[in-house]
Amino acid sequence: MAAPARGPEGRPGLWRRHRTALAFLAPAAVLLGIWIVYPAISTVVRSFFDRSGSEFVGIDNYEQIFATDILITAIRNNALWLAVVPALVTAVGLVFGVLIERIRWSVAFRTAVFMPMAISLFAAGVIWRVMDQRDPEVGAVNAAIGAVSDTVDPPGALTGATGSTERIEGTPQQGLRLARPLRQGDVGRLGLTGIALGEVPEEAVQARAPPPAPDGIAGLVWVDFLPGGGKPGVVEKGEQGLPAVSVQLRDRGGRTLETVESEPDGSFAFERVEPGAYVVAIGPETFAAPFAGVDWLGPELITPAVMIAYIWVWAGFAMVVIGAGLAALPRDVLEAARTDGASEAQVFRRVTVPLLRPVLIVVFVTMLINVLKVFDIVLSVAPASSQDEANVIALAMWRTAFGGVNDFGLGSAIAVLLFLLVIPLLAFNIRNFRREV
Image 1 (spheres, rainbow, N blue to C red):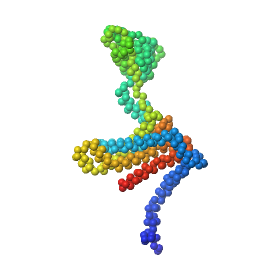
Image 2 (cartoon, one colour):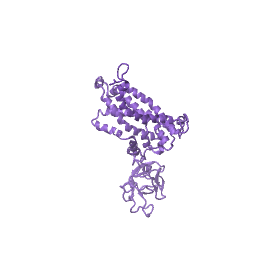
Image 3 (cartoon, helix red, strand yellow):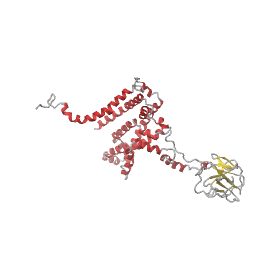
Image 4 (cartoon, rainbow, N blue to C red):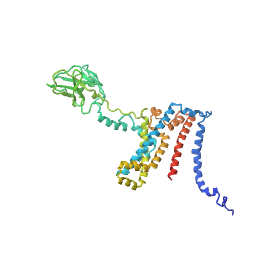
C-alpha cells in the first residue's frame, strides 16, 4: 500500500491537509464565481462600451456621469445622505440604547423600535409614502402637524362665501361688510351664499333675526339660499343660521372696536354702543383656511422625507448593536465616575461614549455603506414627479439601465462608480473588525 504524499519535511501535502475544507468551500466558491465575480467583471467590461454593447467608447460613459444633470443630482444627494443619515442613525440608536436601560417597559420599547427591521425597505417606503400624503385626512404626518397647527392658529368657520345681495361688500380676505352704516337700535342682516357643501356646522339651526337692541346693534348671519328659489336678503323657513362666525364692529375709519361670535341661529349683538355710525363686517379670520398639509412628496422636501423614513427603519438596528455594547461596559467604571461627583450627563459624555467608541464606529461605518447603496426606499417613497430630485446613485443606475432608458453602458459605469465608492468603507470596516479581534 502506497504511503500518503508528504511535503519536504515529511508532513502531508497541501491538498491532503486542506482537501476537506476545500471540498466544503468548493460549492460556495462556484456560486460566488457565477453570481458575484463573473457579473462584476462583466459589468466593468460593459462600462467601456456604448448603449448597445457593440462599440468600444473608452471612458465616455464615465465622463457622461459627471456631465448629466440628473446624475450630478444623484451624486449630490448621496453626498447629503452620507453627511446626515449615518450620524443621525448612530445618535438616535445611542439615545435609544441608553433609554432601554432606564425604563421599565424596555422590552416593549425595544420591540416597537426594532419592528421596522422586520419588513423590507420597499414595504417601509410604501408605508411612509402613505403617511407623507399632503392631505391631512390621509397622511398621518400632516394630520399630526395639523392637530398642533389648528390648535395654535384655529381655522375659520368657513373657507369662502359671497354676499347674497348688493348690500354686502368686500371679499373674504378683507372681510364682508354691510355697505350701509348702522346705528343704535338697527338690525344688520348678512346673508351669505357660495358656501361649500358640508361647511355649515352641525349645530346650526333655523335662522332667526334678533329683536332690536335699544342701546346696541344686533344682526344675523345666515345661509341665504333655498333649493329651487327663495328671496335674497329675506330670512325664510329652511334657511340656517351660521354659528361661530366672527362679526366685527368697526368705526367709519375701518378700525375694529369690538368682535363677537354668532349664535347657532346666526344671531349676534353688540351691546351698549355709543351713538354714532358703525360698520358691521364679518372678520377675515372667519375664512381662515385650515392647515392644508406640507408637501413632503414634492420636489423640495422629498429627500428629507425619504431620509426620515430610512432613519425610522435603521434606528432599531443601531439601538440593538449599541445596547449590546452598553451591556458589556464595566459597571465599576461608571459607578466610580458617579462616586467622584460626575453628573449623569458628564458620565454619558466623558465615560460612556468613549468606551462605546468601537461600537459607534462599527454602526457608523455600516450605515455609510448602506447609505451609499440606498435604492428601494427612495423608489417606493418618491413619486414619479419627484424622483429626479430624490435621485441617488443606485437608483440612477437602475433607472439608466432598466428603467426605460436601456443604456447598459452608462448604467454599468454608474455601477462601477458605486462599487469604487464602497470599497474604501468595506476595507476600513474589515480592518476595524480585525483590530477588535
